[in-house]
Length: 160
Image (cartoon, rainbow, N blue to C red; front, side):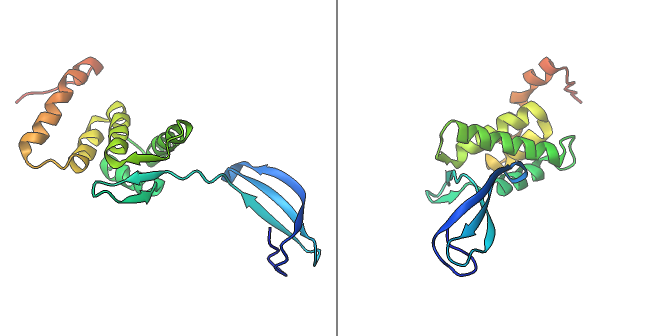
């Protein structure tokens, strides 16, 4: 580890402990040349790549996922904390499975599964953007496909 003061490349670790609040290891170090002390934080860098529809790749951005779900969940019973928890669960599940690359449509399907269990309105809103419905017929079909699940969960589907 390079010293931030004198840029010497050798230092020794004098103390090491877990920094749970940021999911990292906190290390106190001492420079071998100038003897000054400094702190470093070590985190595991598990990168996840998302293959977009146009074939390009980008790093998985949890905040981007949260933003998309927040838009779908606005004015529903799903709080921002719940959205964050769903995004965390998705990321942890993908990393735990050792997945390093996922296609955007697979990621969208995973989000839709979580939203479908949580709130039907948020699910449909997300589906409208994600599935890129071309006309009202596709939207109506998506809603009608949910009606048996509504009845199983005790939701009333009113017809006028």
